[in-house]
Image 1 (cartoon, rainbow, N blue to C red):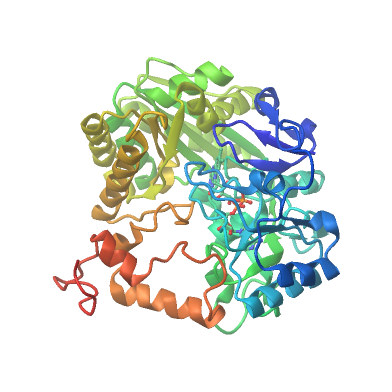
Image 2: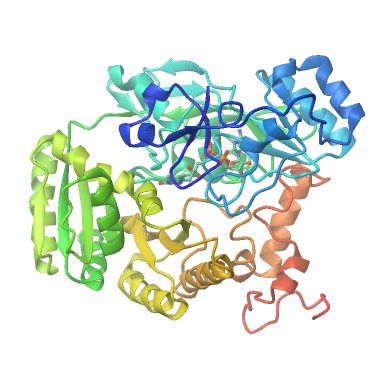
Length: 531
Ligand SMILES: Cc1cc2nc3c(=O)[nH]c(=O)nc-3n(C[C@H](O)[C@H](O)[C@H](O)COP(=O)(O)OP(=O)(O)OC[C@H]3O[C@@H](n4cnc5c(N)ncnc54)[C@H](O)[C@@H]3O)c2cc1C
């Protein structure tokens, strides 16, 4: 059953039994496609003009694996960045690696663009389809292939949900560490393609640090194995290169991940502050003291109120900011660490410091943070989730500047983010029905990302560049760096068919954007005409 979860992202298209979704999501499920729209009477015409390619695809794909009528294509018109929409030319749902190889060979031969799609929870428009292309859904690659407890690895197909990996190995006392807040829905293939992060990544690393091997299919249909079950392999580190490559270098068809033993104990401390800057300084102080929390998250007042109203996590709604700091390890390590963290938080001016008494309270505290995005979706008609990273020491100053920019643009911003990583997620609240408001939001978002670059940070921490941040890539990188990116892309995909137009801007686009990175006082792209 295909369902939409109304979390503020209309196009989250999941194929899940409804029972696995948490209560908050179940309440908001709306059925889509055939359930919600009556089918037009009579056959609807295919939108895809390349009849010959379609005929060839039909020879080896079952009819249910090829969608080409508008009503079937609609669920795929966007990912979590629903401000951008485009009906794909064709949707293909292969089930075997051989089918993927065959599809890519044909697309290469016919020079048809291919956009891979996992669960479609991406927030940067990475899986936005193309009118003239194929949307290649990996939803049917949903099997766990092998669990190897001795080696502490799991080998899975790319459509397996992130959380399903931990669920499958919990009885062995193991888990998969990277935990994006979307983990009930997002796929491991999408996680690899975006190098996804999450609360645990401060201590246990991003996806790139937890993936040991990949099988990918190139645009020519070749099956390539990168890495394996060992910690290192000779040659160029193509495994790292593919991680975070946003579907532009190959299609991931198998993933081997590291599993970790579940820690003996985990405990969380909630600290409230009457001032954002104090909370920012407290984050820097915890890290500077050499403590490595299993999670260190911050929420500002609008986010606290939205989350509290939604999941009743027991948050202090008057606080200007809260920090959630989790420590894990042995009993002794955690007890000692919690005492140290409490002392630091109090010395940094926390107005309240609360330690979860038991696991139920710990999970309740986290529930508010994990549901913060959909919670904000309830208080504003639309919101735009930004994703930039800054050196932690600048947290307080950058949050202050974001609040000034929010006033300048007349748009409210809620902040909920991975503070320990310096990974900001300002959520800009807007109303797409008000003329010009989306454009103002995009401009404000751009300013926030540029602010991140100014203080030595980056324009993405975990959501990827996709369509959303493509202009800001011109601010982050100079022409020599972008040229290297294009050379790498060309080595894998000489005709530029895999997810074209995403992640790496053309030099002309940067010239048009007019915000090129000036390096060492030299104007970038001197070879390009100015206009
Ligand atoms: C409520 C919410 C909370 C979120 N929280 C977090 C968070 O805490 N941390 C975080 O990192 N992200 C978060 N995200 C963003 C998103 O869930 C991640 O980027 C996730 O990794 C996307 O996975 P997906 O399966 O949905 O990929 P999709 O959205 O389908 O695709 C994402 C990109 O990966 C490519 N891709 C997908 N599958 C493949 C494949 N098999 N081979 C090659 N390329 C492929 C696509 O072309 C696209 O470029 C959140 C999203 C939502 C909606």
